[in-house]
Image 1 (cartoon, one colour):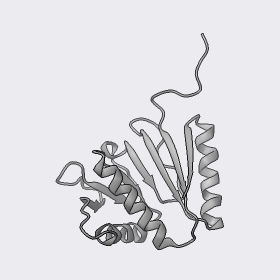
Image 2 (cartoon, rainbow, N blue to C red):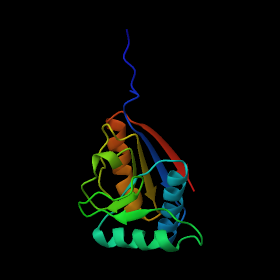
Image 3 (cartoon, helix red, strand yellow):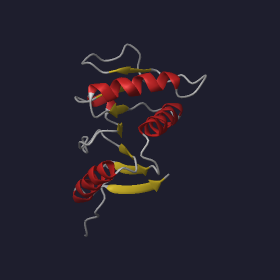
Amino acid sequence: MTETSHSPSLPEVSFYVLGSHDQQQRLEFACKLIEKIYRTGFFCYVLAESAEQAGQIDKAMWTFRAGSFVPHQIYQGRLPQYPGTILIGDSDIPEAWRGVIVNLSSTFPPAEPPTERILEILDNSEQSKQAGRQRYRHYQQLGLSINTHKM
């Protein structure tokens, strides 16, 4: 019997590579992706680089599209009152929110169950692409399935 290289319990990784260096466009793309995740019946954790970036994402979620409402909050160690709320933070992902992780940080999010999907959003700056290449290699070494989408 031969062993397969991809186990169904391993998460799938998708890289979204934007054509712009503009951080505002990256935030807007992240908000649209988060909204899409929420509208398909899932909730996620948005892993930010810093508390400052988490605040920017939180603010952008209120303003990126008129009439859009996605329940979200900055995670500060307390779970939200309402299930399905999108959490935004720069560390300590609660286990129940690890199913789908939107990674806007330069760190490696957890890649073991219960994580099912990791969504990486890179801008076109050299710093972002370099950090993305490191994470791509890391995911490859873990044997994860990786998709890349050039936007």
